[in-house]
Length: 449
Image (tube, rainbow, N blue to C red; front, side):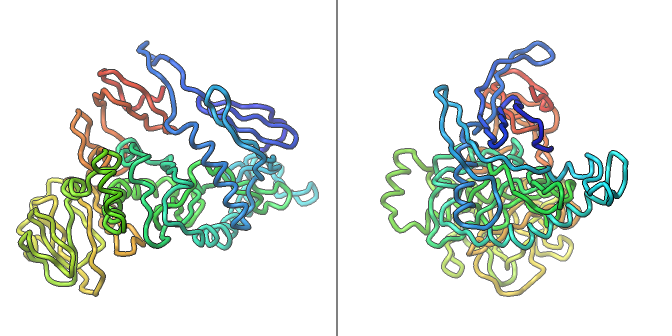
């Protein structure tokens, strides 16, 4: 969308104001509304105010640490009513996904077409943008590293996480900022797609990367960047990553806790209820120890390469990046030729297909859910879905990945709830990250206010 001629614009959550030289974005308060059937609800967006401040801090960081072109931040602050705002210089250009929809942008004597749409302009703009992102944006963002997630202690959850996997962020002031011993988190935009890329209308060259609301330092591999600007590929990435992240966060919390040097400080926080008890988190996660060797059962009191096996019956196997238990699949005992490494036990680790040496790895798994492999340096995540054309189920989980038990329905890996559910807590609609307050009433998941 071109900035020409725009003075103001509003959504339910944000107000935009344009002048000849500046752009202002302000968060809005929630408001009471009614559904089509007449039932009342309160419309608000989670972290609606915090995301404005998060973007302001991201713009400052990117401007100081990289050469990536972004709008220059003029000021940011808080209105008396609690709403937050930021003001930047205006970027005169056109949003990438609008190129080609506003006619040919070439000079009159070089027009590709006189039609209302121009595919040649769109192709050129997308090619230029992809080259700039691949050669400049991604390398420079990846070079920014931190020991802590988020920005300045605040972690903004990705906007594309569905309600089924938002739970790890509900305790946003708890474990998310526990630092690692070495800087392993990389800076990520959080919504790197065509709708956030400004292009020069005359040259069709990359002009600026905007909308840094969901930016921050996150684990490697968590960025929603498919290596292409194709919109379908961009949407599909979330379907693969969201279930993985839901399991990844509590597992990494355990690793952060174990690596923390001042255990007394953390033990005090556990007693005060500031952070969860890591022992309980591990019990709920179901921690598997993976090592090079044949799959076999070990006694709970045994250790593998210095890593203690929790006191639950577990299978020990060599490392494999794919963990997948298809729904309702009847299998033989793990390790038998008939089972090909699967088990009727949903927590059993799939028998490895590779015997290549690898560091000890711990895998968070849960019945009917995608599992995640996290290596010793937490360099990658692998989801056990779509690798073999199978879509396991995921469960709606609580803060630490435990299946919730308040009437919510099981959903597919895409994170879209099936049917309706009953909840007396804050729920979230599937579109736009909007939340509603519900009071023990049945609501369709398709309702978005």
